[in-house]
Structure formats: structure tokens, C-alpha cells
Length: 294
Image 1 (cartoon, rainbow, N blue to C red):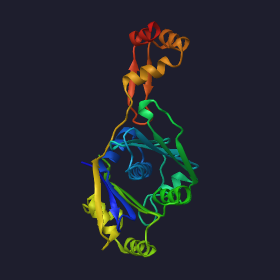
Image 2: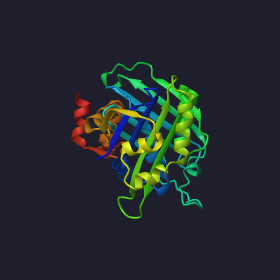
Image 3: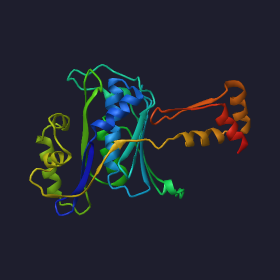
Image 4: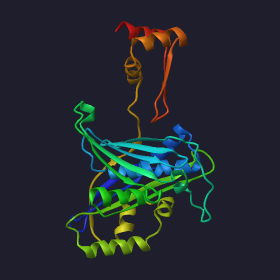
């Protein structure tokens, strides 16, 4: 079972969060049938979004969107307070050959663009207050580095973000996935920041640690070294979409009765596919007639 933990370190001056997201990323890759490079990119963004939203309250929603100039065209991930995450790549077939060091060329399919973070409160209650939106240019396309850049430039939080996704040739294709995020709060001692930076520099690669069986708490220990920390909470995480047949019906109804009559006369039904999870909903003639009668 995938898990997210979050806590505080160095006398509550450093915020830490870590997660193992293997099953979550596997389900996204299975649903969207992404290429190897797109699988890694989507897995990193979904994991990064989960970490970024680790302190979400009930009815909050966090969306991270990359408007990419490269072949992938865009990546979107959304996290809720209950640990559910969903996401997709606009062009799931985007792919590049692996680089000389064996890593996936995620920057190659991202190719620049903008990273946008949208924080919403009360959206499920219909409150719809004005969301907070922050945007920064894509600097490297490595996703972890660009999330760290967003935190520094848009929220003034110096951060270290490390995300890892490893693949395998056979199904389920995603072998391991996870990540860790460390944020320096305004009261943090500069010496603590230097210590953490040096520890991270000499720590094992996050991808390798996850591959070797590291838990979320292991990841935090690797990145903090001798610095004490306290776990404040944990939750199970999963890929989960909030789409449903009822929402598909409501969306069709919102097109107007003339459009519904046209679907009934010409197509004898309608099909809706959710962009976030690739689930397909089919409305038959009776379903369309029911919409017209309401």
C-alpha cells in the first residue's frame, strides 16, 4: 500500500514529507498507456503534487499543471486531502531515447513552458472561492527541480525536491516510484540548511533508495542525516478519479437540449471519456431521452 508521511524537523523549523507511490503511478500508466518517458514524467509530477499537497485540509484541492512546449504538450496532476491523486499526459505517446547515462529524457519531452500551481478550498462544497494560482517558467524540465523553483520563486520557500520512478520491461511496467520534499521555514537556522544540503549531496540517489526497498521514513532519514524529526501524520495514497456516470450525464445535459436531440437522432447515444482517468461512459438512447424529459 502506498503511503505519505509528513512532519517537522530541527525544532519545527523544517517541514518534511515523503511518499512511496508505486501503485498510484502504476495505475496512471495502465489507464493512460503512456510511453516510457511519459510514464516517468507523469509519475514524477503526480508524486510531486502529492508531496506539495501533504498538508491539504478537507475539501481542499491542489492542481499542478505543466504547459509544455515539447512533445508531451502538457502534464496535469491533482491531489485531494484524502490521499487520492489523479493525472494525465496530454500526449501519452511522447517518448525519447534514453540518455547516455541510462536516465529518461523527461526534459526532452517537456521542452520548456510554464509550471502552474492552483490551490482551491471548498470546491466540493460548491463554495468556489477565488483560487490561489502561482506560475513559473520551466527551467530544466526535470520536474523535481521545477517544483523546487516554484516553491522558491512563488511561495518564497527554499526547498529540496527529489522524485524517482523506475520502470521495467514487462507489466505493470512501473517498478518503483516515490519521492521526498524538504522545506525550510522562515525560522530555520542557516546552518541547518547547509547541513541538509551536504547530507543530500552525499546521500544515495532517491530512485536507488526506493528500488532498494526504502520506506517514506527511510527517505526522510536519508535526507536529514543526524537531524531529529517528528512525524505528524500519515495517510494511504492511491490513484482515484472523482468522475462518474452521473457526472457524465450532467455534462451531456449541460450541452443543451438541441445537442442532446442531435446525439439521439444521429448517434443513438453518446460516449464520454474522462481525461484524468481514461474511463469511458456510454449513454444509450434511454439515457438521452431521460435528459430531454428532465
